[in-house]
Length: 468
Figure 1 (cartoon, one colour):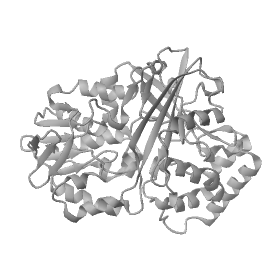
Figure 2 (figure 1 turned 180 degrees about the vertical axis):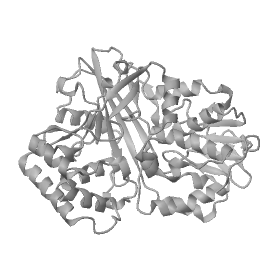
Figure 3 (figure 1 turned 90 degrees about the vertical axis):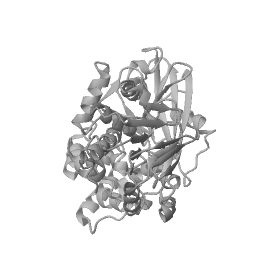
Figure 4 (figure 1 turned 90 degrees about the horizontal axis):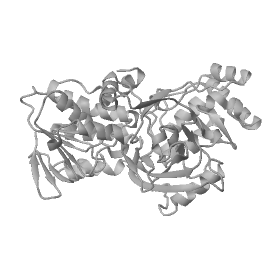
């Protein structure tokens, strides 16, 4: 592994991508007083998949149900610097909608809310899984589900929900990514809750979170960009091709830029095809699997219904409803709607892939129908705004054999001084939250300039276990 160079010897550092990872790298370079860098972003604004938009009715929308929490004191300090006093603190309320009712998440801790016949099926499966114990390391995510949750919870929640999120079968996914991303099972805790008929919501790394008062999640990234030297940010500029041997980036405009190090957040299934001299490694890109996301915003007149007044987001495993998650977005900040107190809003997310195609022309109407069917909005709800965007890249699937493919591509890129980082640049969903992505950029710069290890990329389990 390269040991990095001193600040004066690193040369030109070029960043491709103005999302959390690219901005993390730029922030760290600026913080260190390093001036020989430039950021290229194809969009005319920053934020990438963590951006926000305001529609023509004045409603603010995030590109999905983002939650701002952190595994890193460094990221916390950056948020403090860019957010000031404009943060709203929340206690997480996550729910599951199934069997015609709301159940607190995680479902397994709250099976006392299920109908008796479903509860017994889930409890039987949990006991059988515990009695059998793990026979071997799970090869697939489906194996992991069966060994931890048992057949009942697998049937009623884990399989249908994960099919909707990932738009593929759990049997086609690796189990190595899971870590803190999925709530596991504590049978004693489940039985206590069952006997006491007690709700249990205290799981997860984001039990509390904060949100910008104005501007949605995108406010964070716009604020960071404003604190960077404007002359080093080239927005609306498309990176087209990379000469790895000659360390040159070619732009769609016909310009070329020489670099000494290239940090790119381009999707890893696309990047090798843009690098001139990777040879047969370009053929590995056909192995990559990912899902796209349709994000549908519904802005409504009136007050938020009492049943949703304190909820943050809701999971929907049942297949007849198109969305896998709905966020009560106006609960995050009153300023996410143009008339606070007199309007409210929901964000619904619908996944798609070649295995689960979705007609973009129908997704908004299907979403509204689904929200009515689940009782989240009434048949007479006064809908003021409907907003829809399609994200081609939503989730990087932890496909079977993923790590073996990454272990071939990443060193080949690194040998050409190309560091592929970020949600889709590293293709590691287990470290693909906003804080992880930002810190991948910071740590890449620390690696180049200071020779430090990239802890987030190299040790996801350690990073996620405790605050760094």
